[in-house]
Image: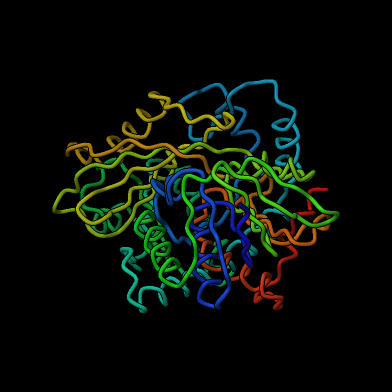
Amino acid sequence: MTESFDVAIVGGGVIGVATADLLAARGARVVLLERGEVASGASYGNAGWISPSHGTPLPAPGVIGQALRWLLDPESPFYVKPRLDLALARWLLGFLRASTAARARATLRANRELILASLERYAKLAGEGLEFGFAPHGLVVACESDDGLAKARHELELIRANGGEGAPLSADELRARVPRVAASLRGGVWFPQDAHLDPARLVRGLAARAAARGASIATGQEVLGFELDGRRIARIVATRGDFRADQVVLAAGAWSPALAAQLGLRVPVQAAKGYSVLVRRPADFADVPVLLSEAKVAVTPLGDALRFAGTLELAGVDLSVNARRVGAILRAVDRFIPGLRAGERLETWRGLRPLTPDDRPILGRPRALANLIVATGHGMSGISMGPISAQLVAELCAGEPPSLPLDPFAPDRFA
């Protein structure tokens, strides 16, 4: 039997679930198809930051040289596993093309607009009574070298030039905000506009609210393929049934390219594996997240726990755990904030973030299909951009003009 809906959403991460919640609130008949459980992928164990201070995108001047040096080090913050892969080669070429000063500035502005809009919506969600650990307490960037400090302060100037707030921190000022940091650290930056949350609580809470509003949350439903009728998706074939929908939203994260290929579309997303470790939180650690700058490791307070998250590994759709990379995160924590990981280890996690070559999400309708909306490619900013991305998708489904320009994120920009 084939069930019919107004909208079918493929993917149960933050984008898909938030979209289902908004559409159900509008009265649409919605089904969300998730291959595993809600919040079982990249939306589960990430750092949980809403970070308008995220300035320089990954492709930027100087990044290629640094990345080439990191390629020789499997414990580096950014690692590409060597392999013969045409899609990866094309992606890397696109990354190289995006690594100009002009394109980096444009990406910073476009992504920052999304993050600021999401930050407003998170405050609204918290005000509506949704419990997800929303904490608008800012962000500290901690630097262990003069070079790292110079780069952090350059990023601060970029953020200020784009209307943001922040202040440099001397070594003493850094220790005043994060008393446990190593005496050798050189200083840092304070970004007061940032916030953080518990990503799993957020996504599960939104899913529960969407279900209460009438959305069908179908977990354990892996999408196997599609049937087309001209320029429309006529049927979605899944492991436990088929579905028809007037509109289809592809929000499957790192699994989006394989599904899009069945529709004749090229979605240039690479699975960017990240890791996190959860430990008991010391009683004296403040409720402020910290970026260990040179190591690219995030330290996030989550209730009575601390999450250490980091690394970007392009190894394909591969969920194996590389113990060396987990160890690199923990050694960085020891170096920057000695003794912090001494508490009980609660969890080691890995997940695949969907990363585009220009570090912008893909949001909108591809020209080739009339009833498809693509919402993927948010990289390491899925939580930061989640609510506004969902709102834009919901507006497209309803035939309304989007509340923010979608041209910077158009699916066909890679053609």
